[in-house]
Image 1: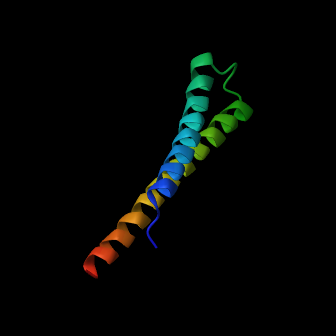
Image 2: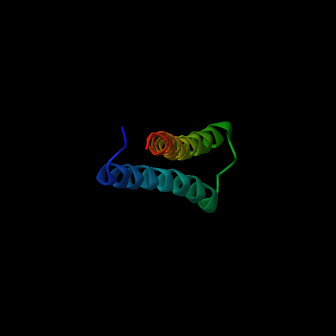
Image 3: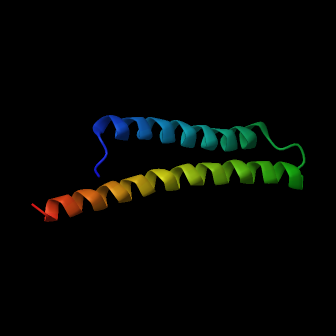
Length: 77
């Protein structure tokens, strides 16, 4: 089933803000500097980076799904 424009707008806003927040967290940590590049601090940054990647993957997955559905509908016409 194709998603409505409102559903797509909501998903876009949700994932974009989450993705932006995760990336900004990483940049903020590097900009402010790590006190000693301890393993704990680097793991925190790595966790934030993984969150950003998950958000990006979610967005790409939604686009892939929507494109597949629309191609399927288009080929049935």
